[in-house]
Length: 491
Image (tube, rainbow, N blue to C red; front, side, top):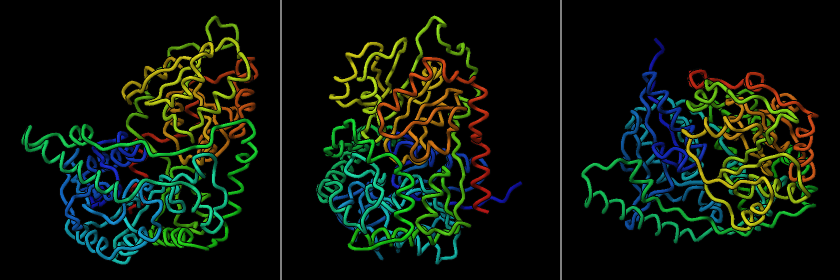
């Protein structure tokens, strides 16, 4: 029997809500927490930055028990989450003695031996230093680029990868978040609604269903630059330019101080886990100690379901009597690159191909642009349970992202299902795909290169590999192996 531990996890999204709050980051965090409980560990979770009340006092309140994980939340944190809502307040993110005292008191109360931080959003940076100084083992997983970017994705002005933040001066003209006061009041109003709902309906409502039904969610106001042919010149080679530009930290303003503070906070950790080899490169290039930065690929229970699903669909070959089925899956946000695929299709008919989109929402301009194109089918959102059926009808998954995506679940879901992927050669997908083996990589943001990759498949220039070949070459872990790998880092 392995020794059981008291493990505390920190993040901004509630595990019970899964991908509905926090997307893939929260889905991974929740499943890992529940997997550790199943192995006999005592797991407590603290979220911060989301719950506010009209009484401004900072305190920690219970948020229910989910699959054996005891959940609590910081009420009235000085930092709002997700990070977008704190973008214009870099100094506020750095320190708060009041929040540090509350978090440390909570850790004492749950008798935490190991603290696993999945997101610093909603917390201040000095919380990590205080945890490390307390003698507890501190583990940080870098699910995104928050530790160097207040916008989280290193995606400048919602338009292109940020390769050099210019000492912080580039951050000043990156984005305009909503008012922090307005965010707090909206969250406080939501909390009152939740409490009223609890009082007037049932004595003990299901926390996941209640918070999902009443969660305040607004699309952040953004004015992204419309995608146009020619922007690829600013995107090409962004990976290498980022690593080179940030080998030396330059600090010129409050945003520069914020980056310095966040890096120092993460440097306090005994282990820094990265879901992709790409993110490990980024962490080391920004000065984190290589010996403590460990690549631990993600695992998920639904990945295992996809990997265990037998593919009955015959491999597509030119002239096989059916169109090539291409799928764009997941978010239609600007940085996921659906507009690159649309620009590739604008260049003329492709031939015998069926292109499906399955997204929770689709911007109206993109919908208008894609709908008239022959062979394009616009679908609605989907659930995890529906993925096996969706991917069973797919020959190729498209992932034409124009951002430094860390370790996209869409790509991993496709690979576990045995479906090859055509993706941009940028960020995390470079770690997951081997060009010409389990997928094709093309120059990010280049609609012509995206189209050329599709034409290569249609012409038979790259015969699509079988499901087992795709899975084997990806080398991704099963969920149990992933939990074991994280346990090993705790030890």
